[in-house]
Structure formats: structure tokens, C-alpha cells
Amino acid sequence: MRHALILAAGLGERMRPLTTHTPKPLLEVNGKPLIVHHIEKLAAADIRYIVINTSHLAEQFPEALGDGSRWGVRLRYSYEGPTPLETGGGMLAALPLLGPDPFVVVSADIWSDIDYAALPREPEGLAHLVMVANPGFHPLGDFALADGKLYDADAPAAAERLTFGNVGVYRRDIVAHEAPGRFKLLPMYRQAIADGQLTGERYDGFWRNVGTPAQLDELRAELSRRA
Image (tube, rainbow, N blue to C red; front, top):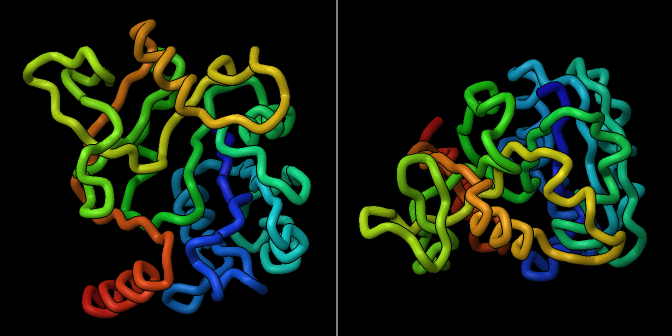
């Protein structure tokens, strides 16, 4: 597991007006862009090849981040055009840059203390997702977790409904057979669950979604208190 994909192609509509002139992943927290937090943590986990998918204000990413050499990694950019391809289409478009082995995927608009080195190098099935306790803005969660497996509608009674933390390890096959274009990963997750091919783990450490100006302000205040 030497490759990673950082999802950074969103339009950042809920973060406006801050994203009118700056992509959301390049908004600063603790004096550095959000996305740099992930690059540093991936580098610390000895993941040296990182692909960043881009769309909105895409030219700003190489201008701000360069080739990754300052962090000891190699950065490549997967430009999706002016309209983002969503999570599934973006992953499919980035596959030529990601190599043949399983890879880490993380959304740029979260902040967490997740140790990427502790993730499985290879998922048992098509993907392994990091799940977190349901935040207030998403009380019903996404999937249920029991004994390391993820379930949807037909979960065991002992399963716990949790929210996908936007971090996972994937095999190429989860999207490799799809037609190019704009599509979400959710149908792939549900099919993998039906086939018993989606595993997961619960993460109880520090994790925050950064989707709105209010959430960004809350994160900055919380990190200041922690410091």
C-alpha cells in the first residue's frame, strides 16, 4: 500500500463564500491548508505516491503544493474538468495514476488523527472503510458494523449503525469495471455489502467533517483548545 488518492475535486458549495476564490482543501487550519494535513500524515505512514483529483480552481493545487518533494512524496494531479466526476467517477479516472495494488482514499475536507499506517495493507474484500460515531448532522449513519463486516438493510441485531469517515483502503476492482463518467461510490458499496466484500472498523479518535464555514470555525477553535 504505497499509493493514496485524496479527493479534492468538489465545488465546495456549502463553504461559500470562502470557496469562491479558494478550493476548500486549500483553506487554512493551524497555518496550513487542510489538504497538507493529509499529505503529512500519509507521508508519515510511508505512503509516497499521492494522487489528488481536482476540478474547481484546479490550477491552484499545483501552485500551492508543487510536486510533493517538500514532504518527501510524489504528487500527481487527476484533473476532472470543470464538473467534478463524483467519488466513483473520480476514483475511476485516477486509476491509471494509482498503480495495481490497494490504495488509501481520503476526502480532503475532513480532519482527523487517524493513523494511516494502522489501516490494513490489503482489504479482505473490495474495500475497508473507517467508520465513526454518527455526528449531529448525520444521526442515522450510513452502514452497520458487526465483527468487522459492514451491512446495509439486513444487519445483524448486534450491529451498530455508524457514519463513513471518508477514509478507506480500496482495490481497483471496486470501480475498474464501471463506464467512465460521473457517478457516486454508494452503489458500489451496496453491491459489495451484498456480496460480503466490504469490511470496516470503528474509529473513536478525533474526527471532524469540514463542510461549512461554521464547521471550519469550530475545528479551528477546537484545535486551538487542544493546543
